Figure (tube, one colour):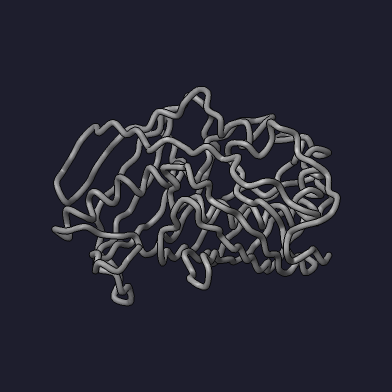
Length: 296
């Protein structure tokens, strides 16, 4: 399918007012090359005060999901499960337009594997490698007909940017602190929040990228203490999401320092994880480097 590269059209389906309002990060799909490559665009609203870098990864994943859903006639949808390597080069700012590119390695009714990256202008801000999403029954999460209509809109003109109103900064409650070694904290997932309207209408699930952002805030505190100065995250690897998190759940988060491998260029490695009701929900490795004054 070839889509207008400008993302415009004289006539296109329109989205209902209550969709794409709280947790959708693709404004238009600009090109689709079969089930091989897809490009799109998303503009971060200029009035959003907090846009975590994890939402750039979310935007890339959502673009991949649109193609995956359309390829199986909106009978299944991918849900994030594994992200082998996420590389962070810069932090986009409110008002920036993300150019999204996804290369799909395989896609069927079982899973999708892909890699992708996001640009602001000619500057790469984030790259996803070795990413896999398991395909689940789409009707469990959303109305298939509504999603098909949304896809038609995105591929024939797109939506007006600016619907996203932001997400809150993670509100963590520390439960213990061993300086420069380990942090434990609790994150109480809200029982109600606007992002559940998009994620997902029929089965609200706390977005894994928001959980990852909370873990990143915890890990950055240890990394900064170890470095003795401000730091920035450069890579996140081995992201595994093992279970859904429902509204109102309490997540027990941890972040602990570990020794980087001999081939790791970063001096600081922090392992993170999340548990609920004694079960492991998610885990990852986060790599940090001291700020040089040039990192965005």
